[in-house]
Image 1 (cartoon, rainbow, N blue to C red):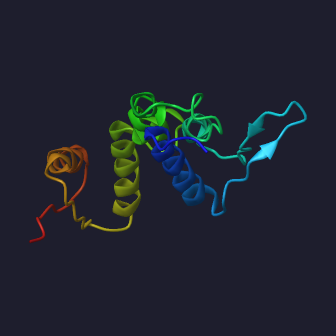
Image 2 (image 1 turned 180 degrees about the horizontal axis):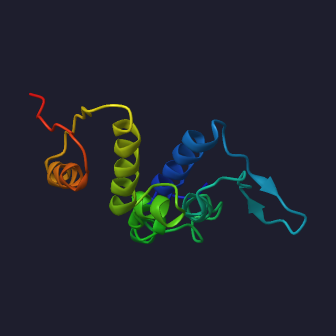
Length: 143
C-alpha cells in the first residue's frame, strides 16, 4: 500500500543479498508487540549482517537510505584487510620467511632448486633469498 520509492529498491537489494548469502527467502515475522522484523541467520560476516538489518527493515521509514547503505562497512571495509586482521592471510614478510624455509628444506637434498615466480615485484625478493643461501644453488629464469 505504500507508494513506490527508492526504499523499495533498497528492500529488493536486501532481499537479493539475503538470498545470495543464505540460499533462501527472507521471512517477515510479527512480534507480540506487533512490530514486524526479518530475522537473520548467523553469518561469519558481521558487516553483511549489519547491512541486511538496515536494508530489510519492514517499515520504509526505518530502512537505510542509498547513501547510508553505501557508507556501511560491508562496502567500505577491505575484505583483504579483514582477512589479514583475522590472521587468515599472511603479510608479505611472513610469506617470504616461509619461502626461505621451504627452499632451504628443498636444498638439503639437491644442488638445484627450480622456482617459477610470476609477479615482478617478488622476483627481486626471491633473487635476494637465493643470494643469501649457501651452497651450489643455481638460479636460472624460466621463460
